[in-house]
Length: 92
Image (cartoon, rainbow, N blue to C red; front, side, top):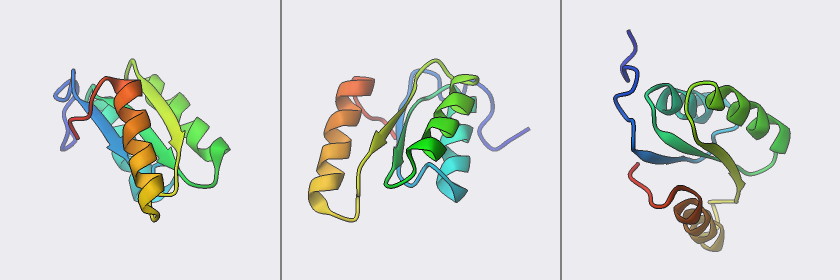
């Protein structure tokens, strides 16, 4: 059993930055496995983000990718605004 057991996060909405690879990817997929709706944030690789979205959708009903450079304040604000619209709010 994983740290996040299946459906434990059902009804929750998460934004994961750097989610197209590495630790961010693993976190986004763990949240999806646990039932959360997830925004996969990426900066450069739309294809890598699309792969995470596809894998995440096999585990959760709502996984979307949003491109933003969160190292810049405007990018972080834009990500959060788009994520709120996409998910209807943010819990995580």
